[in-house]
Image (cartoon, rainbow, N blue to C red):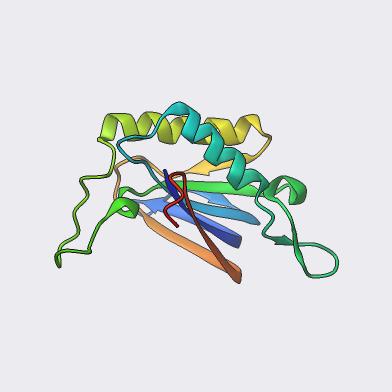
Length: 149
């Protein structure tokens, strides 16, 4: 699994000009599911996202997690995080999970966040979505369960 985390003051996702999901302060999480991913990977990555210390404490240091600040998460599925553009001008998405697996693991990831106490909003799986956010910092973190970066 791959995730792009952005610390936000607000974020929302629209489908057909209607708001599908919206949060205040917290994390915008773009989530890509790979062919080899499992339920265990989804749970572990959710725990990493919820506990990653990227929010400022009273001294202005990044020492607080999403759980510490009681922030929300807007999770949007994004298979393009598995796009490989190293060889051609058109990316290959062969490493991305097929839709059935991707949807199941995306939902497990969201549920794992909820079980940790995070309020979760989502987009609509496989829909054309418009994402709006205000990145605070800016702070953007890339996570990969295979630890390739």
